[in-house]
Length: 98
Picture 1 (cartoon, helix red, strand yellow):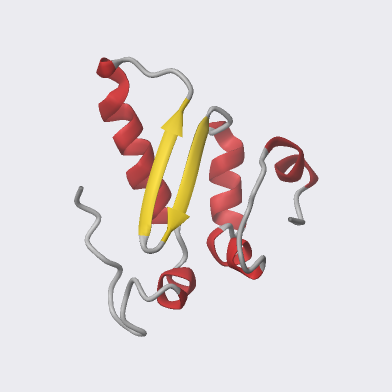
Picture 2 (spheres, rainbow, N blue to C red; picture 1 turned 90 degrees about the horizontal axis):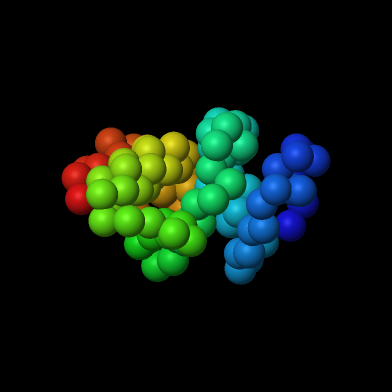
């Protein structure tokens, strides 16, 4: 999956079907945030659900991981949310509450 940023392509692996869906979710704003310090966190978007995971987490770190997931969802562009049927064509983004 090719992205404009060589560094992003080197540090992250992205799988989507169809391939164009990745570019809807990973715009320049999302890419900059991921490049900032998200090397050890994995994200999955599938059927309207979003998950994140890391290799090692202790129970005390779960609130921090939940906050990272919220920040990821907040950065998903509205065009992607509309494409995947998560928000109405001109409505506000869905509730960010867990």
